[in-house]
Image (cartoon, rainbow over all chains, first blue to last red; front, side, top):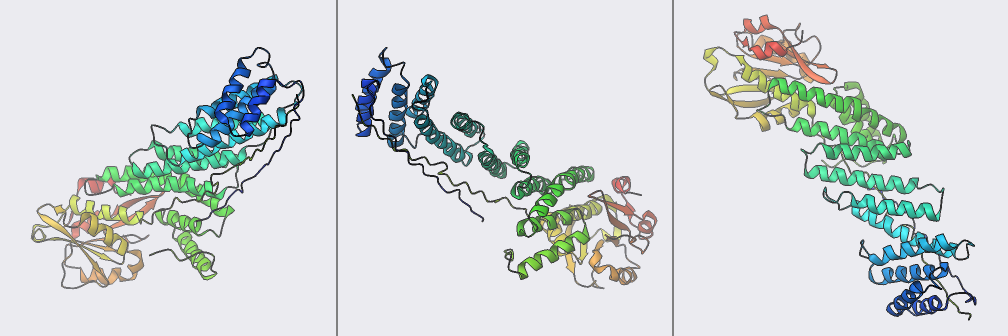
Length: 306
Length: 176
């Protein structure tokens, strides 16, 4: 299993606000309490600032409100994907940005928002690994929050890497759910749609092509597995026509593209061999058999478990 | 009043692993063997053999295709064929003593067709094959691949010469 990690990026941002005289006093006091990790007292103090007619129009007040709730989320609610503190922090930071016409606190506010955005992204990925059909919209909800915040923090920057990751995970989960309910024909289609979305974003992604091929090939195999003594000859012919379309017109082209991108990947070469075997392309089967032998001989892939 | 407010923000862009292995695999089912096995079962059920062969078991012999044998015996072994039960036998060579209602000869053993036909000359054995030109060589039913689908062609006269009457469904779905 191939694993790669995007290394965590640590941004340490130390902003020293020298307590400008015009900064609102209640918010300043709340910030100090937060700095001392007295979060409940800080929340009470900032609530007074937010309700104060004088301080509520100051972007600093909302920045501090956001910061306190963000810290509270980190300390007490980080495992709660429905954390109300996180929502409050986001709303406060957004309000601070909208009030901060001179961009005095914008950089710090965006840093706070970026942190919160990544927590939504992480929640989205975690949910892609465990959702079922009753909760399948949850990852998307978190992911959309991530996207929205990132567009605010870094307008115009590409989110392709994240979009790909998210769609691959969604596809993988739909595929896993399908394995638990093979009669559900929507699930493989949803998996294939997610992988196709990855291909739309990156036409060099061999994993995505491979997985599209696997979805369609496996659909055919699962249909073939249902053939038995009760199958009428007419049904046998219809099943074959259906499967031939899945294998020849959907699985094969995708696997060929995957092979073109990664010709020495064992799973792809084996996949092509099986697809050609199903279509009785004898010459191709022989070719890919030899390719597998070559790759094993050269130590590039391992011999499959018998 | 001047106050000092230090902020330390550790921004973890991605804390969840972003690696994504292609864990989905392709099953190694031999789908061609699955289809051929079903056809052999259809041929068993939908053709008519002479009465003298309708005693004991209904024997299907497989020469040269372990996968067809495996699927056939697992899925269709012991299933009723009329008043008989289906028995699947795998051979490395055609035995002279064993009567077979159907003999399937895989392409990998095509060189043995002539000898098998000679051995089976006086027997009501349906010979099924899977290579181009096999009907002309004496096979009764031959599998063909048409656009990714396995179909079959048959020699009706040759079957009738063996006192095997092709069923209506078999005739209906045979390709010309």
